[in-house]
Amino acid sequence: MKLSRLKPRARAPRPAPRMSAAATMPELRITELAYEQLRAGLSAGAPERGMALFGFAGDGVVRQVVLDDTAQCTGASYTPDVARLNRLSDEVFTPAGLVLLGFAHSHPGALSRPSGADLEYAAAILAAFPTLPNLHLPIATLFNGFAIHPYVAVRAAQGVRIERAKLTPMREALAPAVPATPQVPPQAPSWRTRLGLPHPAKTQAPWWEAEAFARVRTAYDLGRLAHSCIFVVGVGGAMAGIEDLARCGVGRIVLVDPDRVAEANLATQGVCRSDLDKPKVAVLGRRIRAINPHAEVITRIARLEDIGEEEFARLVGIRDPERPRAVVLLGMTDSFAAQARVNRLSLTHAIPSACAQLYERGLAGEVTFVLPGVSRGCHRCLLEPRYRAYDEGFENAVTSHGSPISSTERINSIVAFLTLAILHHGSGHPRWDGIARELATRNLIQFRMHPDASLGGFGAGTDPMSRFDAVRSWRLRSLDGAGGRPRCPDCGGTGVLRDATAR
Image (cartoon, rainbow, N blue to C red; front, side):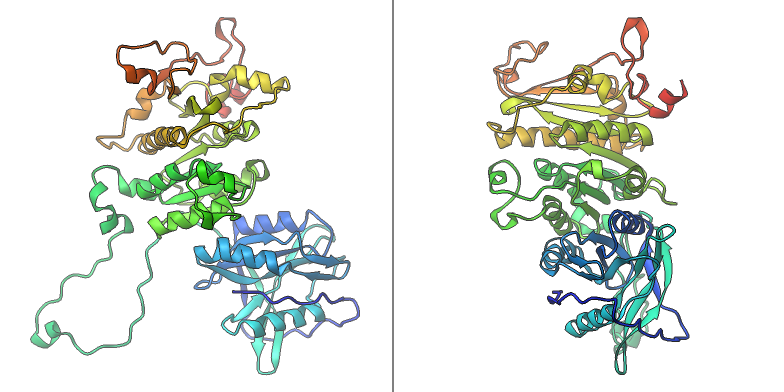
């Protein structure tokens, strides 16, 4: 779906259109998460700020909103940046099956109705897209507090008219995606009917029981993974590992990364030239859907620091009526600030988390993880000298330069293994349940991929390969204040923020 370039029009001289007296008021149905993003985006700037609304054509629920911060705006007009929105639609929304449903923008003062210019703009868009049944045009006002006034532009016998709509927030719950049964025209009686023979029972099995997962039905608890969620921060180097978890049947995957694919990523990450300049989350999201079209993939082109506590809780579904059976938060970024926020989110919401880092030139790496209620301490407890150095102003000059892709794949495999163990924790699965508990007291994992990597405690070993590909897990004392040790300011040494704040 392409938007046409339209010229901005001043609204002030034009009278507001008359509202239709339709017997049935149309609905603007929007998920609670999308509404919160709409409120945050439109209330953060001056009036005539706009956002595009996207959702599935089948149900018309607004599920994704995009701040149009490069639009042409004046004190009395808003014209979308159609070039940018078209690109986002092609790269992010269309591959996810999402279509444009409308635009929301703010008006100055108490002007809560669409203007005549809004009506003309809506008419031009509907004329350009004959298959679009209507166009949502909610107006936001900031006078005496934020408010959304829902309107919809509908086709009429003579052009387009504006109707007032009803705002209906929707709560999304994690549930297996079952394809809708296609409507087919009546057919002639089958040969079984004509011969009076019974028909075989028609049942629709869950998607994780399909042929695609036939060879791994005993390898995992597929029903549990289908109702589980992973929240991934930093998807560039982690692409292969996250794809592997999609092949395991994880049902909800949230991807957060602000970056686009650059040419330098071709040699270090699982991307191709056709992915250049595309958002990394969009590239990975498209691949996950190609592996398992039933997976719920949520992408955020943003930094983790830009996602609030409430939005995080909604993204992972921990407050849904049918909350995921298991959630794991993965910090796969080289940003220390983001890794520290992963630690805080994990503690605040009592969600298991794992963070991964490669050392200089990929000679070695580390993975730390926290399993609330089982492990002691948190990521800050495990990496206290690093946190203290950053608190004192340390700036890391180490980059990914000189790191071979084999190092990246090695750390991905360790994280994927650990994630599966955590997702199966408490499931009773004969293979996976118990692994996370066994590792919980040794939750700093280091691995060496070159003999020059200086990691104390590894030793030379009798096998030459141990100098190149050795793995050790360490039992470190949590910072609980005992024995004169410092007390962790994040968790108090408990590994759960609620426990720390209650002390």
